Amino acid sequence: MSGAGLTKEILSRLYTKLGKTDKEIAEFFDLDRTTIVHNRKKLGIEARKNTGQIGEALVIRKLARWGFKVQDMNKKDKTSLYDLKLNNHIRIEVKTSRLAEGCFHFSLSNKKEANCIPSEHRVLSPTGRTVKIYRKTCDFVIFVGLTPEKIHYYIVPSSVIEDGKTTIGFSPAANHKFKKFENQWKLIRGEDNAAAN
View 1 (cartoon, one colour):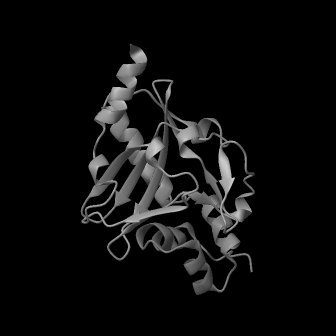
View 2: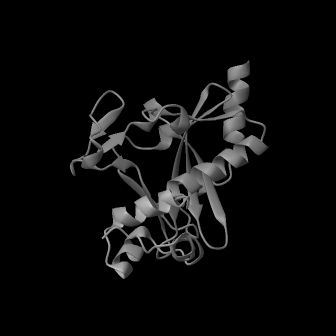
């Protein structure tokens, strides 16, 4: 089925206003998900940002407010080893999680299907996923935790992330290893000042 009867009004209401996924809309109309995606694009209905994109946008905005010149490396080079470059020298990786059952769960690995190859910057985990060696690929990992009430930012020096670690999980309410890094934007400013001297 082509989805010929789907109008911009119907798709916009379901996708944008009601927040339905392409898959949910496809199941409702007994269509393939790709038909919904194609029709949405054809009708000019933009895709929503995923959780990772939302986190990166929040961090870019925050860093720009602090006066940093921010380059989004994902727009410049999809194969970049990090997400953002600040003032042409500070490398930032952004990981984002929504609160689920009272905890944030940040994935640090890539699925097998991503076809990432182990190298000097990436190791293979026992599950077959690849994991970056963050101390080699970036200066800081910024963990963005999204809750309905608040956005949590943890500015973590990459040397703190254990090599080969595939996930990091914690409750924002608990006293955890990363708590001391919450809102520690001064660490990045300190790195920038050190490079300037």
